[in-house]
Length: 535
Image (tube, rainbow, N blue to C red; front, side, top):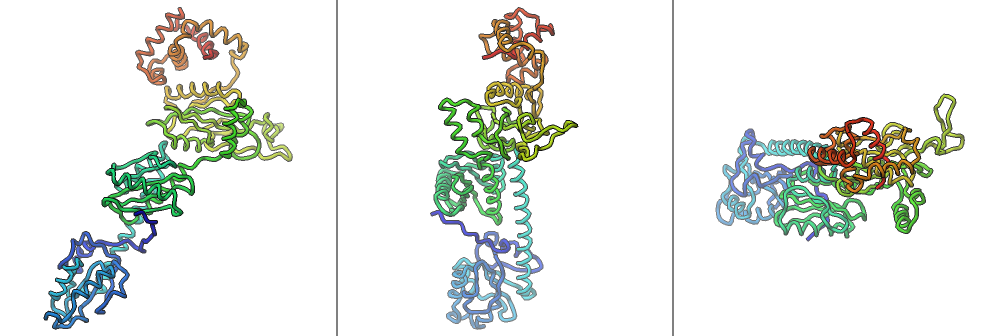
């Protein structure tokens, strides 16, 4: 049955009885009881009371010289050893240490038999070893264990923080947590389904119990719960109030500090799974509904927000991104959006698309006016210029490169031009991958192409490229090949095809177009046409 986890950590972690017995300076010897490696001690306490029960907290090594035991205890019925040991066990005593001399020359046989009957470890303390020396050794071992625990927790915190900064933060955090606990770490979504998991796969019984424990914390006031199933320790941590995400942990054993380590992971996962808010969810929902009902993009764009500060966003960047390793998942895509300063993320197939608000220009009425020396300052009474979104590069340059990702960034455009910007970002990403660059931006500067009216340019492009217009793969390959200066290898990388496939397609284009693709004038004309080709 699941129970709310109550922190019960002592000031210092327990130590193994075996570690105490290994101290040569003490000379302790176990006479009976379970193996010392299976016994943990939380402290040492000396008592000569015939009933030490009221004075024990649990987990102690109880030390006695047997002052309360008559010297004639060897005779049957002279002392109730069974009752004495039973009271120690009932109080939660971890072990009994019996000092030989000055009262007794040997450990009474009745005491040995009673400890063996009740499974209480019995340790002989030699005459040369004082009880205060044993107690001091226990506390020294506990201090060392505490230092080791703090070091382990610190290393785990650093490792989890490093994992959270990777391109795949959620799987990385789960892998690091599972490795630290030598078990299984699972992230459950609001519907109770596994979103991500790492570590050794548990049995069906443990898997079902962990999922049930995760459901328990989502409907319970407490944010943490524990359970034990089939010898496996289970724990569930709710990630934020009312959001439904839960971290589940299954480990074959529980060491001191495990709860702290899992709690650190829960905090990180709570931040990673939280929705990045740069505008209200209600406003974005309203924008979606209006688009579905036929509103124009420029009409709903103001509802999407756009970072900090007042004033509507008039221009946007479209960013296409691919992780350097693996495929993007919803959580890592959301984390990338947060890094770039936008919650408007679409993780489709192997490319993540993000709409990023651009800072306003002076000519957009951003509350600034030019000075004589070309600098700008806020106009009197105007609001301060909007702070650039998180993840932006130098002023006016747009989104910056992000570790672990390859980015293609469009020119800043108005909402009506989002489709064109989407194509710009796609081409920039293809070029970035081909040139192995972390980020490529679409160039936004006047050129000769701007001297030709768009309608005439498109008509010329359709006529010139008509022979290959019915085969999109040919036009795509020709565009990539020209953009990469005729490099077979880089074009193959950009298109994710074999270099021989590129050669065959380019040869087919040359044949269908009846053009010499080695001629720079031909290449220039084809590039002009491809830039204006629609569809």
